[in-house]
Length: 271
Ligand SMILES: O=C(O)CCC(=O)C(=O)O
Ligand SMILES: [Fe+2]
Image (cartoon, protein in one colour):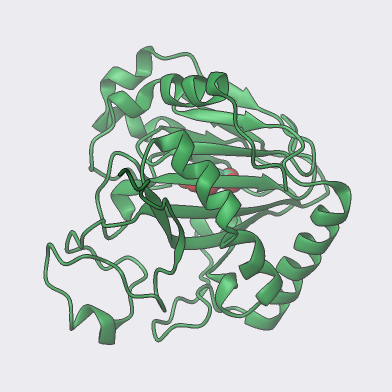
């Protein structure tokens, strides 16, 4: 896992709100992670959320044909866990966002099946149960992601316009502009990736993906990270009912079982 980032990469990430990291995983790592992801998916059947007390079942609507989505594989597969909770990956994300640490919000594999629908433009953080300008997601290509099979697209700089107002991933690619008309002025940028490349994108950055116009699956593993110290904003998202019962708005989300710490910078001791 190549987790070194340069000052230029940090600058570029903060300006554009996203960063492409070629060769993040080598071929052996891709094979290992992909195998583990597919094992976990097979284990889950039609259930979308692993290891928790909340049920999320796959349906048959538009969204279910955007991708095969399986969430929190880290909870049922130790190989997936060793990648997604890797402290070096956490440090890398912390350097990009300029925060002291990160917890897992949730991981998810997003498999765009052959002829799967587009992923309409959206922002991630507004769906989640905390609100932070410094949430970030890693998206790891486990197969080449191309213009043909639905690689990601970003609206660079849109994270400066994003608010905590959600846009659904529906059938209208341009639905986002009803909520964020200013973003229609931004030229989108495609992010084709080789298997093993990854990208990071800020939680308020507009992004989406095209349809998969090929007969092969587009397989990606992703993880949303929450800055350590983030607090509950009242939204349920994937939190299980028994945990929700214990939470009041403003409580720090620091349950190790639900949102494990990935990395925390050790304060430098000055004498
Ligand atoms: O893989 C996709 O099609 C969309 C990915 C995405 O929205 C994300 O990783 O936040
Ligand atoms: Fe997203």
